[in-house]
Every structure is written in structure tokens, then in C-alpha cells.
Image (tube, rainbow, N blue to C red; front, side):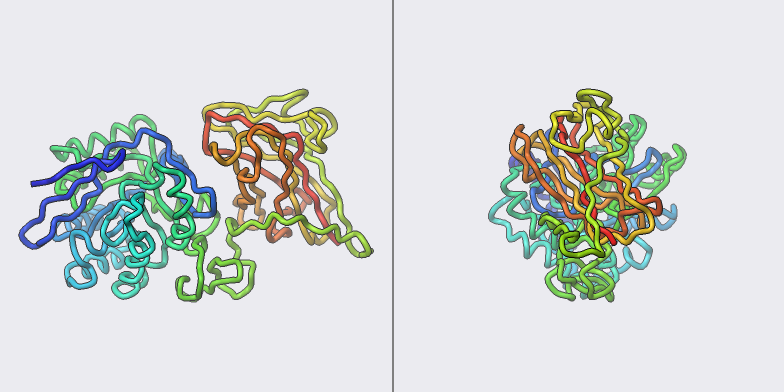
Length: 471
């Protein structure tokens, strides 16, 4: 008989064993989280819960907790017959001991051979929010199994914490574990929860997903490949999603869209063995295709040290301070003294600490805007530094993020967040832009963005300028 008990805000279920499985195993059954997910204060790449990175027509199917003896195979059969590919977040000693069971190994190999992606859901499906869990062993154990059973599965480095913990608290636990998480890969949340574990019929699984889709949701769908009703519901679910014009994508597609780099380039590595294929672990602790420190990863470690003014004693170099020329609102709303969409030649100038600030207002959707700076054309850029004077919540509240536009890749490079800021006091800070020449277009334009994942917080900028050195 299935046993259920509460663990914090999470409903944990030990599924009954079947004739071929001697030990009861954990299902990813849980109540819907009502609180907002947390964000780690140090670098740990993630695709957030309800992040909204997918277009309205895009669906990324994900299946947790497999492989098992029966239902994972049925799920794979349906995906094959419908031509849909998905991401499986597997346990290696849950329903099946993958290391020591030929059926388990064959199912994982089949996932890879049929074009699916395989992610890490920990070895035993233990709650990572519990201090009794050996988190490092739970995550590295799956990677070791994949290297032995299906090494090409490591072409993606995605993982999902059982029950979504500790992304739902406490913050201190998430911050403690962030360095370990950064080694595991990109953590993947979900946008649509099928709640298949609580359903009594296959139609319930179908309705739970389609109700969210019809309400306008898209993106990552949470399902479980060890659930009989999920296996039964899947053919109809896929058919009805297709009839609604939905297109099936990989979670990895959304990761690349967010970070401008594959998941294998976003992990924190210690040695070359942590990297996939021919990638090497660089001095910045990121994997890349060469041994240079420039990995090409737009979300690498940020160095906040000030850039030296090389114009002193160096006639061949020039250092200029660039004022914002235009401010473009992408979403939400801004305000402040003067004309809020003009950031040069009058309030709010954003060129100096003169009290003519731009306010990022509380809005749904969340506010996001970028400033454009222009430097002389035909020069070689040596360094770029972004100077800000910020007023808003500190990192104990929802984070604000600063980016620079990489014109080579067409993506935004994460410079850092507001973890350095005081709480509602004006704070000065500088960000160094990596690979500076990649962030200046042919017309000499540089774009800097400020945004947040939240819609209920505001912030103000009294200064936003770029310090450029060139020759």
C-alpha cells in the first residue's frame, strides 16, 4: 500500500513495489508549491519555475523518476510513434538499480539512442533540502552511471532536484548548496505541472496539462515516466497538443536561449574530466573547446575589479566615459524625473550622480529595459566597464540582473546582479564586460540591460555609463 507523509511543504510518497522490484521506491509526488521559487545568491545556472522563456507554441516534455520496469518503456514507445523527443530526469537507484540491472541500462541507452536528452534527478530521489542528504554523492553518482552506461547522454548537463527543493526554501540551504549545484549542470524547473501522481484517471492527467495550455501557459511540462496513468494518457495528450498547434522542443533549447550557451558550457568544472567530449576546463572553471580563458560562455564568472585607465602614460590608448544615448523599454514600465525614455542631454541623464534617476516600476510583466551607448567607429576596443549607481532591494530580496549585449552571438551576457547593494540606499558598483570587442557592433554601439525575475519590486538608477578603453 502506498504510504504518504508530509516533508515540509512537500508531499512525499513511497510507491508500492511490484513483483520485479523488491524495494519500494519514491515517486516525485508533491503538492503544488504556492510560494515563489528562490534564486541562489552565487552562480548556479538554472531555468526557473514559470520562467516563461518559451513562445506560446512551444512545449518541452520532461519525465521524472524513471526508468522503471514497465511504464518508462511505454512512454518511450509513444514518443517514438509520435515523433516527439523529450527530456528524462532519471534516478539510478530508485525504481531500478541502473548500474546493476540490464533492463535499467537498456532503457537509459534507448533514451539516448532514440534522440532524447537524459538529465540528473539524483541517485535515490532524496530531498536535497534535508541536511541528512549527501547532495554531492546524489548528483555525482548519476553522472558516474551515465559515463559507464550511456556516455553520450552527457552531451547535455541538466538536472532537477526532487520535489523542487531547495528552490522552495530555505534560502540558506540553497545558498549553501549552490556551488555543488553549479557542478551538476543547469537546474530545470517547470511551467506546467501535470500533477499526474494525484490523478485517478488518464483523463485527469490530460486535463491538468491542457487546462494550463488553454489558459496561455507554455514551456516545460512536468510528468513522471513511472506512472501508469501518465503512460496511458500520453498518446492522447500529444495528439491534442499537436491539434492546438504546439511545437515540441527540448529543455536544452530554452537553456541556450536564456544563456547563449549549451548546458555543458555552463557548469563549474574542476578538471577536464568534468567536461564533455573535447572540451577543456579553463582557468575560469568553465568548459570550452580550447585551453584559453575565454570560453565563449556568456554567463561565466564576473570579475568586478575596476578597469585600469590605460590612457595614463600610454599615448596609443584612449579612455572615454560614455553617456547613455537612448533607453529602450522591453517590458513593464519606467518612470522618474524628466523624460523617462531619454537618458542623455537632460534628466534623467544617467551620466552622473545628479539625482535625475530612472525608476524601474512595479509592473506585470516584470520590467526590463536596455540603454544604448555609442563610441567611435573603426577602433579596437581594449576594455569595457559598466558603472551603476543603484537604489533598490538588496540581495535578501528578489535579484536584479545587469547584462551587456554580445553582438557576435546575439545574446545577453550576464554581468552580475545586485548582491553588492545596500537595502534602499544608493550604492555604487562597476561591472567588467568580458570579451569587450564582442559587445560592440559595427556602428560602435554598446547595449546594457537591467531586468528582474520579479514583477512586484521597484528600483532606481541614478547613473548608468560605460567606461571604454580603445586604440
